[in-house]
Image 1 (cartoon, rainbow, N blue to C red):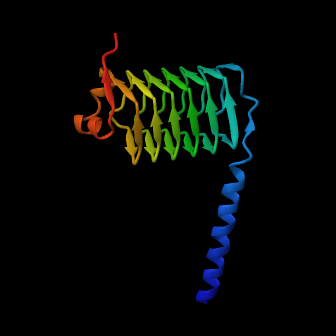
Image 2 (cartoon, rainbow, N blue to C red; image 1 turned 180 degrees about the horizontal axis):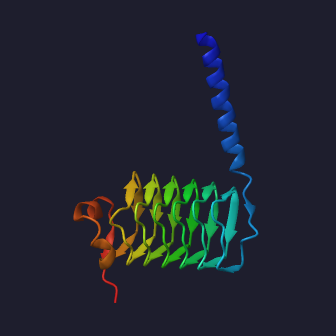
Image 3 (tube, rainbow, N blue to C red; image 1 turned 180 degrees about the vertical axis):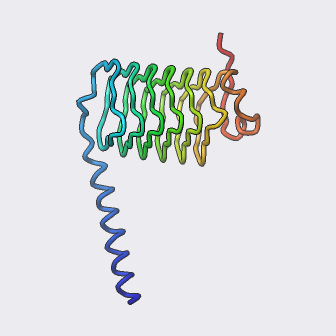
Length: 181
């Protein structure tokens, strides 16, 4: 009986590993790329293995989405709602969140590079194992955000955002506090 379980788990793990390694090579350009999307509603739908490049979402809705192994490059979310969206192994490069609602946003093992979080609501957001590089927080409500096992490299906060974090966390994560005019 024990041998059957061992074979089952070996096959299961091998299948899972093959699926993950092969799926990472199949990113394709999304039809959402290169366009401006005013009042776009893409709520409660999965979106995976896609690249969204040079897109702008204004007054749009991405509520309760599931994103898996995606790539966002040069994307702007303005006055957009991403409440409850789950992102796993997603790359955000040169992305801007402006006046966006990221409450309940869950981001696992994501890379966030050269990005800006400006005037965003992040109540209950969770970043697990996220890597932040050259990312800036401007007037971001960080009071109930969890950064679990996340790293920060060359990241800044303005004083309005810094007031929501303890001095200990700012030092631990090596965040620079900058006064904004």
